[in-house]
Image 1 (spheres, rainbow, N blue to C red):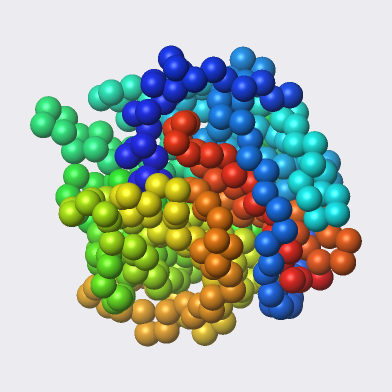
Image 2: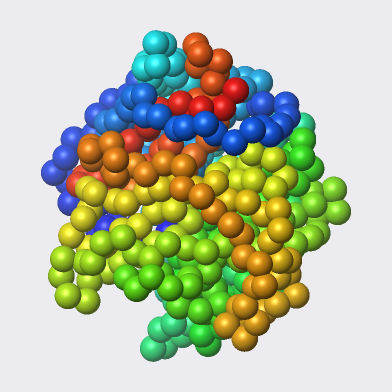
Length: 387
């Protein structure tokens, strides 16, 4: 995501001056009812630079619950700069609506089909993936993860790495990639994806036969990035049939404007989709996150209910500027984290969790601290309001 590059430089400072803290599937998706009301329950803050099995844990850009083995998946998006590209498994309890006994249990590296570990990110080298979201598939006993790729236009050379949607075994070894339509491939001209604004969200539905993929920000050919003005900004949601591996539909999702004006004139700002979660084949929970320079500990994050019921399939449309969607996705605000009157960090991932005592499904949300000592790894527990 775009924010991590703005803040990453502080990691070197942290390694030198801050001591690391020690740290010690569901079978079907069949949520047919809308949430009656999402409510906050608790949070857990993982210590900065938590050390686990010779790695530093953090940079969690997604969370997913495997109810079969009662564990959670967290993918790290540091592009292998600190340790090889990796993901973690963890367990924790929810007792009396509180998060307790959070423990990392495993770490695995992401690898090519031949077993080689993905390379670390290096200057002038676009080979390292940029992992963003990971989901566990209990039917196939494998994982799916998204890679945003790279688009860097330099004076001497351009670095173009196409984004990808990857299916891997539970140890991280690549099995195959889903085909990516041409309009999502990186180009040296302003056409196609923006840097760090491509495949950010993944959601299974239809008993794991269907998967939705969302872009964080608009494609160049779909118009402007979100700004302060309230107008049309479009991300896309792609639908895949996992049996045929085909992209069967695409939809135009309306993004909010950026929530806050940067405190410094000309400062960085962004709003986009950070994660999605399917309720059924036509309804998704969509988490939008807005950041502006000067509000590093006060990100504006909202959860929307997205309704694809009558949305126009734009799969054959290469530009929403030239051909706007007749019926875009409809959305309804379900939860605004700013109402909590507490610190809200860089929330990037959302997942259903175990059932609460009242019978409702829990929601877990995780933040990506970008390995920045000024940010936190924030795990938030919510009551989804759904049975």
